Image 1 (cartoon, rainbow, N blue to C red):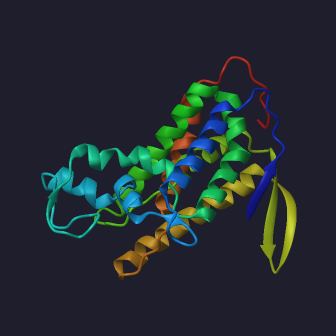
Image 2: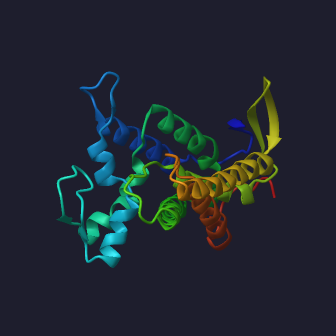
Length: 249
């Protein structure tokens, strides 16, 4: 199921959502290697600024020394704490390709404005960033020795979706449903987002099983799960802004 738009009204202008859309797009364009045809994100940038679980592992358990260079493969080097931790923030603004960027920004466009309207700009940004970090941490926990960089705003946006799931469960979402034929249906948000979360959880479990047999996927499903759960938790404890139009409860 692919969400296209929702009908939950908002009152204020979602300035933070607009800024996040712009920052993610600009960061993606800057990460591209324009000498390639078509241009693609530079692997060096993704590795340096993406979350590499093994990088955090060696800082915590091996005094920062790794038996390989996580960028060029040129032997042992020291990994600083900053180098291991900073990507938990920077990775949220990088993407692995055009489709990765477009789908993430589309989901943020659909669900972000209403959550921002409910929380206000500052708390909404805090929720976004905390959910992105929580997503990266859960991904690291399930892929503790991986040297594959993880990038994308998916975890942070999953947190926004988790908040939306609780705030606006009865809001309607126009959804593209490919089932033999393509259908367009208005579905309750709790069905669309609940289905998405279950799919991510089951995919994460399947990926963990496959990893033990030597197979893996490039999609960080556990990051999506972690972000969604963090968003549900935070929206329960963060106060709503004083003036708002509440819908869907």
